[in-house]
Image (cartoon, one colour):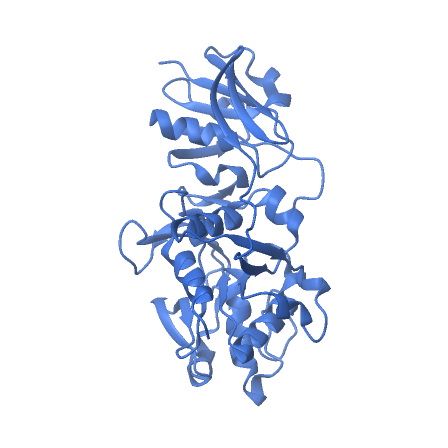
Length: 353
């Protein structure tokens, strides 16, 4: 069977490849992507972790069949696959045989079309909060979460749907938080997401401290867990200035350090949980400093997941929910199968202090 090419007119990373992913899932066909380029400010445009072990366009996060994203047309398969590419790159495949479908983007929905026939439609609307909605502070810029890396929002809404609750998500950019963190007075739980911006870290650490003190449920993802571990170390007077080496290379104490072998740990790797969540997507070059494990534990934090000397997950016993993971559970979450860590976080928010 010749490949099917999906020409996608999406202008943002969050939209590109989403319908192609769902279509390939439905047909149980492998998905390939010709790497797109985006005009505008999208630092997390290519942060979805492919099982093959590298990062691809963030809008491909809903794919269950993704094989590869390539930059060279010559690397694309010649049969038995769905291939998604930007509409702007249509000329690059003009010589290749295969069916052409088109993904059209409107403010309300994405539509996969074959001529005038709509094959698949996906709403872009998020559920509106009701009067009993849980108020969740997402410590990030709204633009980044909606337009570049939408997996966190989808995972939260999937977990909320499974619990039959409504969410009122408040976007709290970490670089704009007040010194007193009065913004947290209006939320019932906080999520510290991953991302490429090291400018977010000090704000995330401040929120992690406040959530600990105020008994606010807090959930850290990748960089967010690193911020939480650093906050735990800073509770010791001698480690008050601990910081990620990626943020402050000259700091006296580094909470997270590069791998000794310089590796980029990226891919879908084992995680100590029940199937189908016994794997997790990872994308990091820094690990918790193993020389500081005892101070971390003496702060009261428990390491609840570990691979060799790599801290994979942490929790604070006695707290309503103060947990983090080094990986990206949001990338395994699906509308009909939310990741249990997101569900547990929202259940903690729902439970009175």
